[in-house]
Every structure is written in structure tokens, then in C-alpha cells.
Length: 290
Length: 283
Image (cartoon, rainbow over all chains, first blue to last red; front, side, top):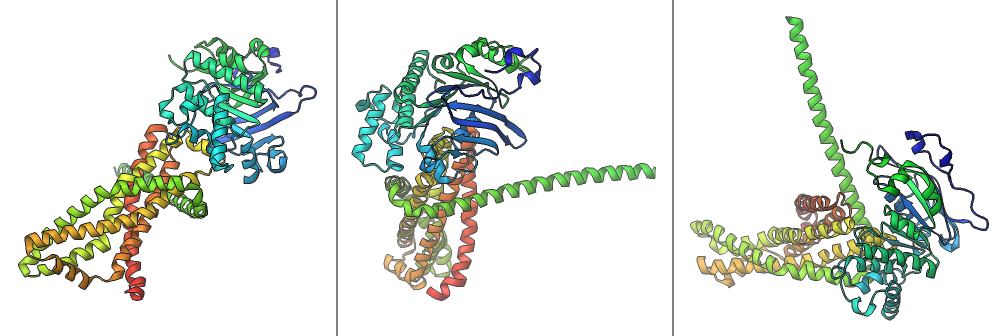
């Protein structure tokens, strides 16, 4: 856990003081290791030395306000962006089971990594012109080149895993589904290739409270049943405390707090406290309004 | 007084220079941006050509696109080509009639349609009906993260989205051009017979006298090139959409504007190439 409690006061420098990953617990090696990751977009310095470890089989929630760099970090983890400075290494997911170094990985390594990766997008990102069957089975058809019967079998299995009435919705287009169902179909597509890592990009955004709980329970359930490592990017505190093993706080492009749920509750970092209480005054809203 | 006047002159010069400087800077910026876009478009086209070997894997999408681009455009294209042929016959016929040369209507309308009007009308109809829709569709997919989802699933968006669209246009446009040629000539022939007493047989005879076989094929060839230009620009603009719904609108508009410009520029170059290189060989 960070040394945040020993900080004397919360000036801007202290607010942005990064915490370095603690030594791993005995017998656990990080699956994903991010070290001093930087990213600029033009003159804007979005990620400013992010360092973070993610352990095999855990659910790590990354919290952060708007513009904190959550999406940029996620795009690095999706291998859509390569580190311009710093390192991301992931154990055993490159071609031939080697460790992947994101900065120097070949296209073949990235493809191998992506076969171990499932992504649940904010708005599910289903292709509107395709049916549920075609959407969920897309990676099996396009990448694995499985025959249609096998694809259908796997799609039905995947849809049942996320508690959807497979036979009823297989031939529907995404527009005919509710928001919660679309999200579940998105999760079904993310798990169909049996990934080792699942990234969730704000999975509960835009859903009603009951559906939010359903998606959270599903995330927990999948982690238990499939033993996947999950990284969830969100600013929904309830969801974070429901599903997380550990919570990290990203603020102005740096990880400024990281710990278990109890450690997070007790952490006095003003940004974390503002997110916990939902207060409109604090570092996240400084300079807003009158 | 003189000193004051000099100061005024110097100040005016600085203002003029700074205006000129800013204008030059802006123009340079716009040119650089357009050059970058053009370069990116060329790279996308090369990438699409490299994906042609995977065409078997996108056959369902290709069929869907051919249906949308090709079959969906036949009626409107035939209507416009037919009307154009009729209007051309009427306008040209009155002038030719004054000189007693109306029997040459077939040659004039035939040459105009096979060499220019057929391919150009086809390009404009396809651009307005299909190119803009392609840019909007792909742009919306980018905004909704569907293209990111494809990449994360290791599905190459160029193979999955761009190849079937460009290929569908390359297949459809030459066929549509042939249809436009035929319907345009038919419209011209009908008006020639009805208004200027030029029988369909005479119209046909006059057309054949001037036109030779390659004229039709040159038009079809040009149409294939236009298809590559429209398809590549539409997909490139769509794939590079930013800023949500507003960006989709911008992508659609710039697809139409850029495609019209590039189609006309390439038409000029192709005509010069046909005259200088192809006619001496093929006639």
C-alpha cells in the first residue's frame, strides 16, 4: 500500500505524487507489469510515468476522473498504442508462450496477445449490420476459421455463460436488444475465445441500477468460473467496491493510490475521498464553476 | 513629419507582412494537411491491394456491398442517363438541324456518352449514393468503437471493411457505366427519331461510323479507376473520423468534395493518357 497516510499536507505536488507498486505477495508474480509509462499527444502529457502490477486471476479496478488518462492506459493494454517511453510486459502471451514486451513486440506477438485478450467496450461496440450470432462468433469465423456448426455451438455456450436466452436472440440485430442485453452480448463476445485477460471499459455506463448490478455480478461470476484476470476502468465507485480485489487511482496521468478495498476506504488522498463521497468540491472539480 | 510618416509606413509594412505571413502559413498548413491525406489514401489503397489475396474470406460482405452499390444504383443511374441522353439530343439537334446535320446526332451523343458522360455520371451517382454512405457508415463504426473492437479481435479493418467496399465499386461501376451508356444512347435515339426524323437505324449507323470498339472500353477502364478513387477516399475518411457525430458529418462532406476533385483530375490525366498512349496502340 502507498505511504499516503504519512503525507503532511495536500499541495498539488503531493496530490500528484505517484505510488510505486509494492513488492508482490509471496508466491505471486505479476501477470502484467507496467513501468514508468509515458504518453504525449502533441503538447499534452497524458500518461506521466504510470507504474502498476496486475496479478494473475485478480480483478483490478482503475478509477479516475475525466481526462485522467484511463482510456489512454486502456488503449495501451489493448495494444492499440505502443509505449513511447516506459514498458509494459505481460507474462506468457506472446507467440510461443514467451513474455510480451509491448514496445518491441512483433505483429505476430501482438496477435498472439490479442487471442488471450477480451475487451468489453463502453457501448458494447457490436457491429450493427450483424446478428447476435454473427457478432459473438466473429472472432471464431474471421480469426479461428471454425466451421459454422462449431461457431453456433460456441456462441450459444458463450451467451448462456452471460445468462442470455441464446436461442431467442441469436438472429436478432443489436438494435433490437436492450442496453443491458447488448452489454451482455459484448461480454459474451469478449469471452468466446476463452481469454486469460479481460479489459472492461466503463462497463456499467448508461445502464439502470438493476442492470448495473447484473453486469457487476456477471463480472464477478466470470472471474470465479473462468479464473481470468480482469482490469476494469470505471468511475462508478459502487461497482468498484463490489467487484475489485484491488483498486488503483489514476490522477493526472499518474497512479497516486493503489491498494485493497479496505486500504482504499481508509486512504486520505483527497481525490479518492472526493470520488468516494461524490463531493463537488475537491481537486477533481478545482477551477470548475464560479 | 517625415519621421512620423516613415514610422507609419514601417508599421503598415509589418501589418501587411504579418497578414501575408499568416496567410502563407495557413495555406502551407492546408496544403501539408491535404498532402498527408493524399499520402494516407495512397497507403490505404496499396494496403487494400495487398489484401486482395484474402478476398475469399470476405465474400459475404462483398456480395452485400455489390448489391447495395450496384443493384441499388441501377434505377437512378438509368433515369439520369436516359434523361441526359434525351436532353443532349434535343439541345444538339436544334443546332444541327439549322445546318442540316441532324443525322450526326448518333455520333455526337455516342462519343459524349461512351467517352465522358457515362463514366462521369456513374461516378457522381455512386459517389453521392454510395461513397458518402460508406464514409458515414465506417465513421459511425469508428465513433462507436466497432473498428477498435475489430482490431482487438485481430481482424484487420482493411480486409474486413475496406476491401469488400472498394472491390464492390470496382465490380459495379464498369457495369453501371455500360448500362448508363446504353440507356443514354437509347434516350438520345428516341428523341432524335421523335423530334428530328432521325431513325434509330440511322442514329445507330452514325454512332458506329464515328465510334470504334475501344471507345466503350476506355470509358469502362476510366470507370474502374474512378471506383478505386471513390472507394479509397470514402473508406479513408471514414476510418479517420474523429470528434463523434460532427466528425462523421465532416468525413461525409470531405468524401464528396475530395472524390469529385480527384475524379475530375484523374479524368483529365486518363484522357491525356488514352490519347497519347492507348489510341496509337488500340485505336
